[in-house]
Amino acid sequence: MSSDRHAPEHMAQSINTMPKEATPIKPERRYKRGYDTQHLSADIRATLKDAEACKPWARIREATLTIASIPAVAALTVAGILALFNANISVPIQFGASIFTYFVACVAIARQLRGLEIMVHDASHLTWVRSKPKLNHFLADLFVGAPVLSSVKEYWKSHRIHHGQYGSHKDPCLQRFTDMGVNDIDLSTHWKIARAVVAWLPSYNAAYYREIGSQSAYQWTLFITWHFCVLVAPLAALLTLGLGFELKVGMALALFGWVIFWVLPAMVFLPVIRSIAETEEHDYEAGDTEFETTFTNDGWLHRLLIHPKNDAYHVIHHLFPNIPEAEHHWVHDLLMEHDERYSNALRRGKLLNVQ
Image (tube, rainbow, N blue to C red; front, side):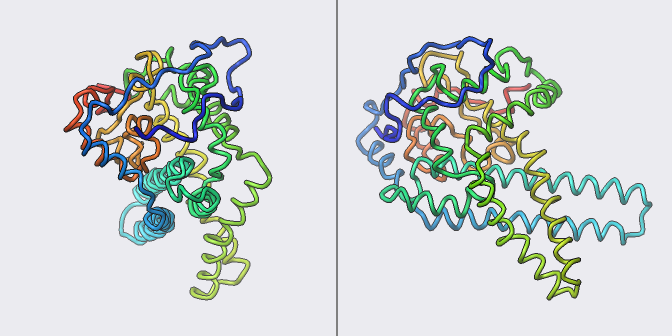
């Protein structure tokens, strides 16, 4: 039922992010899928098939709202900080509250940026316009790829190997886990998770952007052009024409706002959320099949921050990769009710199962 038609048996070689001295911890052959839908009723199978329907206008609307939320958060943050400095409170409290307000804003913005990255991943499975891949890629690149220095085509080059060679030494996700030493790290407390993230973040972040092709001049050109046209130039125009700033001052303030409310959250906060999210998706040592080693992570903190676009239901994605992630929550509920085998799949209610 609904196997990924983008994932043939033999895929191109992925970028090897493993140290030369490291040895693969899994064999050449991919894990078996370990799940089918033959035990489900015809009605449930038909419902799952219907869930694969593409809804491009819904995806465009979702992407637009996600992008618009970022300058909205920035504007509210600036207004809040100005209100604090106009309030009749001590200067240390003003500065402390302002720093905390900015920190919360950065976390919220990074969460939305992660949502855009997830939508790039979703579009790489042709979930926007399945019948017209070029249109699928164009729309997704325009609305979600360019803003986060990504592209559907480049993302799919490595991601198809994750699906097509899952669990083998060619799997880029497994390679990244091996490079990070996830299986050898104690993640039993929130403090230990924080220490681990700080330790693995530089190499992890470099490997991630290298895998998705973000180092290309073409990708950087799209990124800079998109941000100038969509964010910087309109803000500069607002400051200049609407608020009366000189052009140079308006442009400088617009660039400054872009850096502190997009670039810094993307560089500092987003990689933390992304690395935790991807670490939670699989435990390759938990079993011998794709089904047995993939997690659902649907605790309140997962849904609020770490997995903002239904990517919490990663088991659904691997079993039915043609189903758009916007549908994952209700598909998960459907199978929890009608499929005992699915209801016993790996699942976390807390961040990395920390007690």
